[in-house]
Length: 87
Image (cartoon, rainbow, N blue to C red; front, side, top):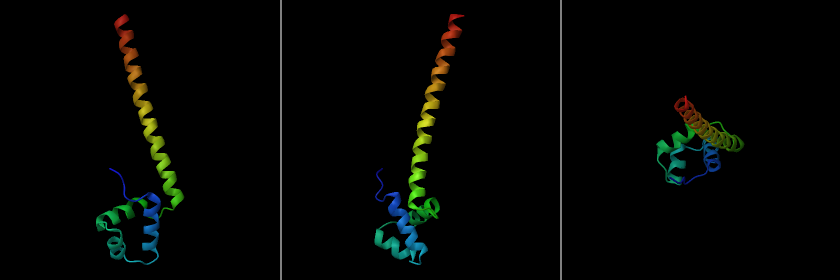
């Protein structure tokens, strides 16, 4: 599912809220549910734009590492099966 708002835009909206703008006004302007706003606040609250970019990089790196571990585990299992059949 494609996001309507980038992480940078979300952080800017949350900064507006921290500067005193009411959440109901922000929600109405953006056309989102209040729960969405509070989910953003929970996930991105207190972060800057650079923090969000770093988080995104770390999540991508974590995904790639998990994929690599899965591939290596599969290769290891296959090699063990081949060795056990040869004995």
